[in-house]
Amino acid sequence: MTSRSWPYNLNTCVRDGNGSERQRRAWNATEAYRLFDGEWCIVHSHWAFTQTAKGALAS
Image (cartoon, rainbow, N blue to C red; front, side):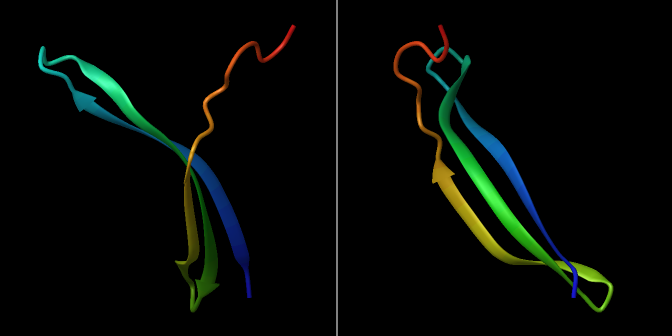
């Protein structure tokens, strides 16, 4: 049986009162796939809010 995992990021956006788009949430996601009878199927999905960095990331 063949398995794969795929991590990705999703940014959800909304329009404000002026019609401008702004980011509402940032997500991290990981989905695990398994090959069943020649077709890839999601067997596990995990979503979490990203952590916002506070302060400098590097010096």
